[in-house]
Image (cartoon, rainbow, N blue to C red; front, side, top):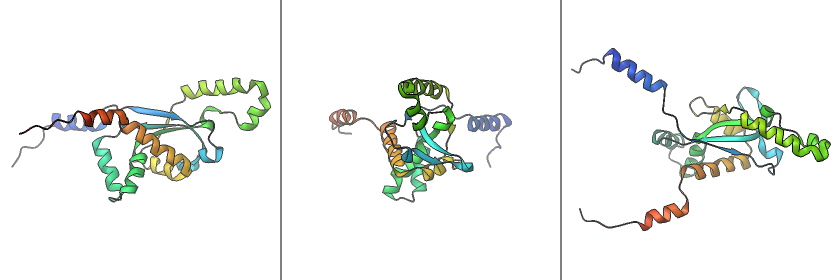
Length: 179
């Protein structure tokens, strides 16, 4: 029979579980040209608003495996589950006091100043965290317009894969060796 873990090992394991290593997170601002209806989202707790910024985390191998399990092996579902799994945070217009269309029209020539002030607030605004572990990422995904979900899938592709040129260069480096 094996020896029981010492207290030091247990506390070290527990500490490791509490503090996962930091990972890259990319943020994307939703273009001002996107229709307001397409930016609307319903979040947990009845919170609703228009999406201004989304954050996407780099996935670990374990998270990719969990996405595969969540889709039940369905290849088309895998793309969606991977995109949902990368969702790490969200900022709504309401979080930063983004001006409405009516406010911008009323401001006339001063509309640019309103937008610049909102952009400055956006840069200081912390993200509302999203995660599959607490189902907030799933809830946000479900509450998004299909066009916004499509942008999320595109963001997953942009953040989790290499460029076509890098892939071509990698494949061109192929050499056959005998072992």
